[in-house]
Length: 153
Image 1 (spheres, helix red, strand yellow):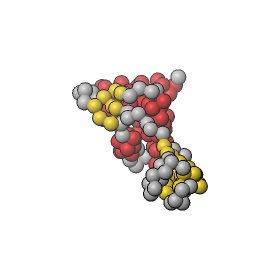
Image 2: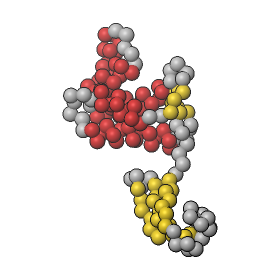
Image 3: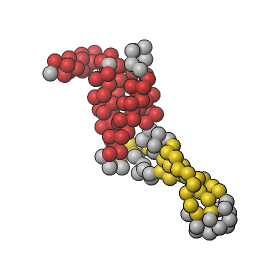
Image 4: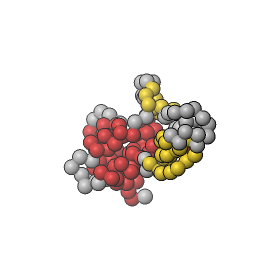
C-alpha cells in the first residue's frame, strides 16, 4: 500500500478491526519511511444484483424495498421487526449465493411469500393479494384454499 504522504510502498499494518458486521476490515497503517499514519478499508466487492421487473425494466436489487413490503403486510400483526429483517437478509443472501447477476422480480416475490407463509398467514395473504393482484374474490379464495392445503401437508 502506498503512503498517501510520501508515496513510498513500505507501509505496515498497526491494527485491524472488523466493521459492518464482519463484512469489512478497517486497518490502521503506518509508513515505515515517514511514519505517517492512515486508515484503509477492505471489503468484498459484490456483483451488483439486478431485478428484472414484469414489464422488462431492470433496476438494482433493494433489500429495503423487500423490507418495506414485509412491514406493510405485517402491519398490526404480532411479527417482530427483527424477523422481517431476517427474511429480507436471507432472501438477499440466497439470491447472491446463486451467483446470477439478474433475477426476475417474480422469483423474489415467491421467495418472500414462502418465508412469510411460515411466519404469519394473515400477512402472507395480504402480501399475496397485492403481489399477485387478485382480480376478484374467487382468486382470493383459491389462494386461501392452497394455503390451507399446504398447512395440512
